[in-house]
Image (cartoon, rainbow, N blue to C red; front, side, top):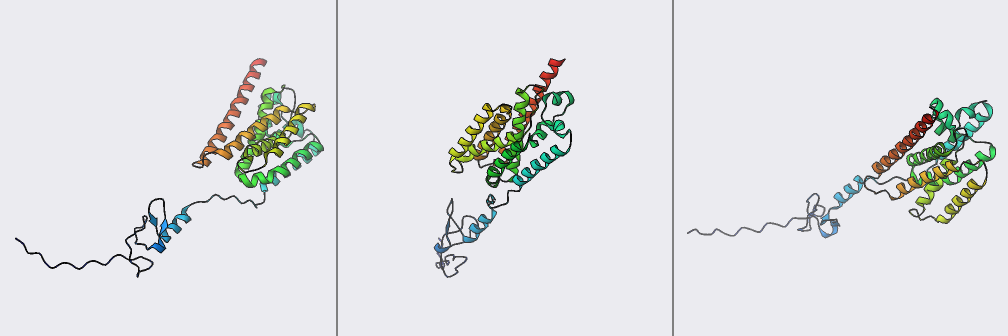
Length: 278
């Protein structure tokens, strides 16, 4: 039989790491330091200390969308179109060398025409309307999307318009103009309007008016306008509703798939035309 010894003295309770005079039995779920009620910060599980909360906030990368930033891409695109228009007037044969001519694309492998044609215009009225539209709608869209996505939107819309022209226009009919890209901006704005709480009626009305003009006025390429509009609307919906998780990867993947689809359609059309000639 053993004899019990004297009872041990009770240990002192832990104290808050920030307030040593305050006893507490609550610990931070992240660093496990004791914290008093004044230092408790609610977390998804339990409580965290102020230091851990601050460290966690610093580690979260917040999206940067500077709505006051200068829309340099929009201005650069306007400048590029104006410069190209001046060169068209000054350099003989430049327009013919760069406009979209399906027969030339296929016969001479001049696939660059699918993009260069989007920087040419058929007179002052043509370029004034397109640059006015770009000036009005481009800056706000660029600020919201960011420069990279805006560039992708503009060039894929221009290409989407050119691809539909290449598919559906007679091979000897030349086409030129930035209207495919401009209609792409219209379509993207419409797709984004609900997400951004815009009044979509004005952009929907603008699209309807321009589509009516497209199909009523002779010599306007409805293929370029519709191709750009559909491409821009698809990309706008992607930018508005892509899941937050892996958003950049998803947007990049879809853009690449869209580009590859355009390449495949151009290849199919070129192959068909060459087979018909042969």
